[in-house]
Length: 87
Image (cartoon, rainbow, N blue to C red; front, side, top):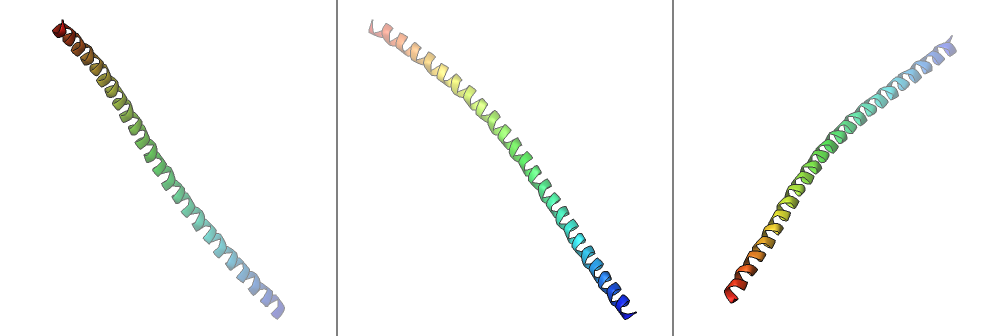
């Protein structure tokens, strides 16, 4: 009878340890899921920032092209004026 009781006690201890380990695994999995969600959120913010930067760069390129065209027109006007003054 003592042998049966000892085996039952060891089995109960084993089950308790398994339950504890399973709970720890579940907590770790939940923490990993929360961490993954945070990473996904941050990556979304990075994507939004990159898109904003790309839009701003496009605006700067358009403005730069416009300034370049204006400088070219101004150069032509100055050259035309100077050629008239010299003549």
